[in-house]
Length: 168
Image 1: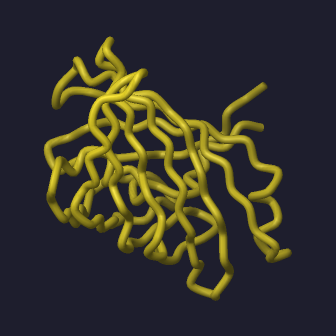
Image 2 (image 1 turned 60 degrees about the vertical axis):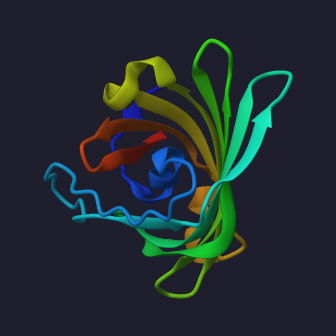
């Protein structure tokens, strides 16, 4: 198995995970320069919805109100209506569960989900790892339906940067 660096969706979808309680966040995160890598992404969220403590931990929902994404093979915007669900377990590991709708610049609808983990004990130096999945009925983007990917996120001074790499 090999991992080929191909940014499918970079940065945009992860920004809400760390926006903090009760805030509306717009994040524009620069990335290191790489060949064919576009310069940045944004995601906006509404105020968080606190679910409070539960059997497995404390839950928070970050409603997604919009944003943008760019990658080597597609670019467009994030549609309102999705959400990041965050569950902070007693061991300070956060379980991530995201569901959003994307629309490419040429009008294609794409569903994106991911589950992942984040070490909350690392504070501002933290990172997270995700397992993204995509679904679309548009033939031009059918490769996304078969794509296996891993995502990694680092938390920098301007917020999280999420890079998704295709597994070949």
